[in-house]
Each structure stands twice: as structure tokens, then as C-alpha cells.
Length: 230
Image 1 (spheres, rainbow, N blue to C red):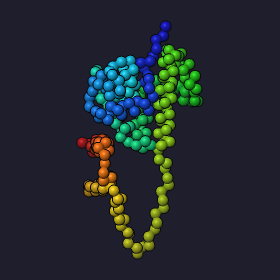
Image 2: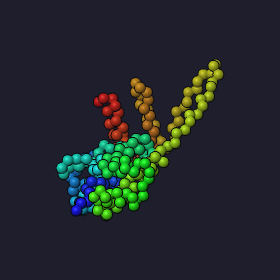
Image 3: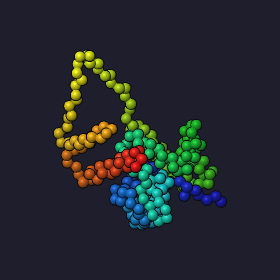
Image 4: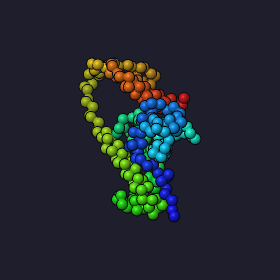
């Protein structure tokens, strides 16, 4: 009798997986954790069937990484969490995560020519050795992941045609745009050899917002250092 291939696919969709890994990141950022502590961060009392399935799913999407009993939030997960919905960076990171599970890649290739119903997907999985409950869960996780990809694409800002640049008379001097700061915000300008770096932020930030801003700046500086070859 064929055995279930349930260990070979994530038992939750990517949207839920991102929500789950966010709860770990908010507490421990990218610190190394034992699998038992990671399970507690996910809301479980410890390692059991459900928590192990969720941990495995996060690993299959590439949101958690590690060896043995140690795990940590991956750089891929941080890219998803750091950038806003619809941004090119978040979309690219989500596409990368969605393409990690081998089964999802196999389904994309198998049913790329025409959309398949859930019944067709379940039937195909069962013929590949899945027991019915595992096939049902796999289809649900796959559909939820594809829906997230579609939603991120719809959230992406639409490209617009550039506005025409008005032509000034030859005798006119170019006007220098005044630097305006909206009331209730602060503006910091850093002059670099390549140009100015400008940060505009509300004057008052909550402790949670300060932490979120620090996380974003950490990711920004990490990328800048990498691109500068440091």
C-alpha cells in the first residue's frame, strides 16, 4: 500500500505561514531558537503533531532555517515582513517563498496549460500516493498560496505615464523647490557623495513603531552594505 506523502508538502498556505513567522520575528527577530521555543512562539505548548507540521511548513517555504534542534527566521522572511504589500521587493520575496515547496512547483508545471478544479487536483494527488485527507490539505494550502500571489499582484501600484515637464523660457531662471515639512513630522537630511538621503517621520512614534522602523533600517543597511561590497 502506498504511504502518504504528507511530509513532502506544507500543510498551511503561504499567507498563514507569513502570519505565523511574524509572531516569531516580533519576539526574537532572527535569533537562534530551539524548535521547542519556536513552537511556543507560534502559540503551542511545545512540540506536538500540530506544531511540528507548522514548523515544517515554515521551513518548506523558506521562512525558517536552521539545523538540528536550532532554527531562526530567515532573510527571505524578513524581506516579506519588512516591505509593504504591493511593493516589488515583497512581491519578489513572496514569489520566491511560493516556489520553494517542490509539490507546488510540480502542480504549477502539471496544470500550467489550463486551470484545474480542486477535484482534479485531489484526484491527481491521490494517484501519486497521497491519502485523501493529505490530498485535501495539500490542495487547500496550494490554493491559498496562489491566492496570495494574485492578491499581491493586484496590490502592486499601477504604472502611470510621467507628467509632461513644462518648458521654461530661455531667460527664466529655474526655481528652486522649497523644502516643506508637514506639521507633526520631522525631517532629517544626510549629505553623501552620491546625493542626499532624506528621512521624514512623525514627531511622535510609539515604542512598537520605533521597533518596526529599526527593523526596516536594519534591512535597508544590510542591503546597502551588500551592494557596496562591505
